[in-house]
Image (cartoon, rainbow, N blue to C red):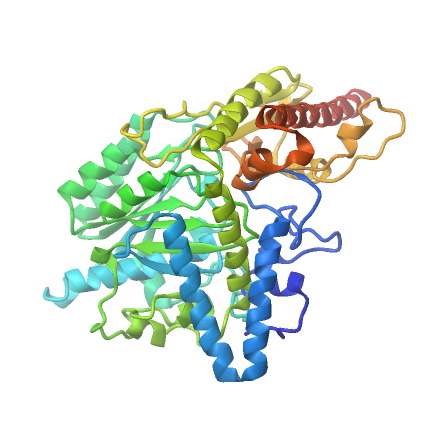
Length: 530
């Protein structure tokens, strides 16, 4: 436990992670989210979201349970923490329909999962080659990260086995880019595969696949083990490489390649999730992006072939001691006995609170009928292009076509729920620094007394933070999340029936366009004056 259980919920629910969760003087963190519910049109779930009222109510129940146990004794608090973590794993597995054979490890955020996946991969390589000569049994790992600029900002750093923030979940301090464990870092070579060209346009799938195959081939020729990332719906909705490409690689090199599916966005089908696990892929997901739980809450799903063995003895060369600052014993399955001994013995109250809220959001999402969810998603993916293609200065980024047939290649791809757009002022595309300022202004009221669009300008719209591209431009993102789907499906205060509530959604998108065009007109006027 890092802070007193008697602290405010807002302080506790942001504990046990890193500086990204710390709220500033305006009550918002660096992503523009609050630790508590906020009156905002939530269209930024591709980054994170402020919690809903029913999510926070669930977190409050968990906090009360922990406080009662702590009042009883330290032992009771420890036991209750273990029970709660197991309950979170069990409920998550039930909601996502995960087979009992799959191990689930909780993490403070999606970025932290990278460290755990890397450590398990190294454990696998040592196990596979334990009977070989020493030089071969200590094979290095080539970690292939696809679309590095379009996954979590800390992902490429954590994938190298390095600290990505100065504040660790344990509360300890660190230096960014320093090794979590020197021996682990020495074993890892990061290779990245870009998914866009210099102008921000998506590369053909065949080209991305070819680059991945080339890196895999070179690594195996050099007797390295490969940890290959599949990105299942990244920040801008892309899925790469293709599952056909990955299937061929794992068929040809079953003992030389470990696959991890980066499904952190949560924009996947439960069927696709099960299919990936059946293929013996590691899969990580969060409860804090699409599903709308408070930032952040991650987990790693581990199929039987990649699970640690109870009899394995671990030392620093097999398991990085530095992970004890990121993960606690209670967050991993009880039968990971030797690993639990090397993880933190502190209790991550913040992570339990965030996951309690996230599970409530996941439950609410799947309580909505399939028919209603599909209707809302289809409305969104039609309304966004229709609304924003008519805005001068707003340029929608191209997206993958929606997958209708679940048997097509991208089994993990959901409907189109993320749209990126760039902004052009006086013929020039805005850069990331400028769009960060716009992101903040869109997320707060613009006070004006003489505009006929006053109500739209004063409304708060939380969008996904800008994603940078190689040409110096950047794109903000409009994302439909689970919490918004639940609101449209159930909230009679915004419409008497689903049709009326879908009209409400279209109205919100029009009002967002109005606010954007106000900022564009303002910027053009300043540019003209200069």
